Image (cartoon, rainbow over all chains, first blue to last red; front, side, top):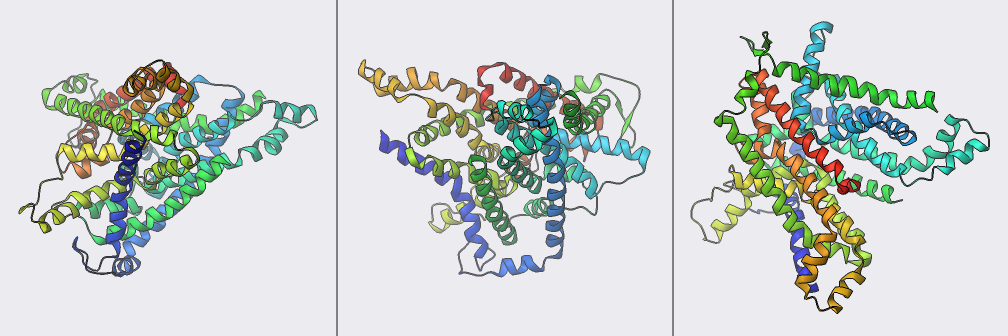
Length: 252
Length: 276
């Protein structure tokens, strides 16, 4: 029984990992077809020369960093405020935004931006993508930080205030340091989700704000291509490392 | 505290109003208007867009989305249960195995979907291998059908099922299983009379976490289902872009949103909510 379970688990892990490993293996294949013809880094060299891809990667990085910075602050403050005293409306809205299908959130933000632009004369662009990413990241940050807050002893802040700390001081000097691992994990999560998002981004992006997932998607629509394997490998390895670090911190 | 709390919650309230509620309210308003001559929306107010959702043409898409989401949830449950059981009994290697589940899951949804495109297409690895082995002469049509979409959904959301199941199974006291065995229960009886009932909250949590995103899936059916309008998400996108029928697209997205919100409400009332 136990051996059968172990064998099954091995098969299940293979199911989860083999598709990605195959992708990585064929990113260093000399042939552009799905036949192994020897090791080559040509697809990575092609990647390094692809200015459209590099520009998109830069856009993605900027969007991810700016939206993560805003969402992390807003989400953390919200989680802390709700920990102090619950608000059914705000908590409900945060959970609702987590289950809102991406396509629905995307078109609602698109409709909102276009409606606003009629009055303000703006255009879709990097800023609308950043706002959209803040919109879907806040709930993730709040949920991760709230999970960390649930493990904290409420008596700590009371003790700090009994010893003369102000409310702000108790938050700043007692709770915030204890929350730091949770906040870091939340920020890394937000960074990953932002960097990966295609559905919402493609709806609210302007002509000058093509992101990496948009380029990959467009290439994938035209058919598979070893360059996609190469960029996918870079993404998988980079974010795999990031998530491992994040998991370490969440457990710390 | 009250004043400080006001400032702490202010950014989230601004988000709630401007980036969540108000955009949805606009979609709500669009869904009650008529389609404009050049795209966009026009008065008068009408309920016609909602009536059109019951047109068999679109009803099929809703039913297919439900069917695919339900099938993906069931398959995920069957695949995840033994895996979660295995991890919960793995002792000191638990964390390693959990990381093996989480790692591919957070890397990139787009990349993981593309991986299946790479494996399943006509000139992909599976067809090439099968042809090399002379098992088939023509490539099998593995891609651009409902089966490929189902596979993509199961692959994409399996970890959502494994983690809550693991959380419940891990707390399960092994003494209960021994007691059942001592009292003469066979392993299978122990499984479905003791383990499964005690894993109930995890089963419901995992099912909700898989079913809800599968129902609203867009990218998976779009890339693996080919050009056809496979699921509700594709219908919504199509109405807002190609068909340029915003009011109907808005009605379809609100119907989808209502389904997701309804499921969330049921879930939050159940005792499984602690696993979110």
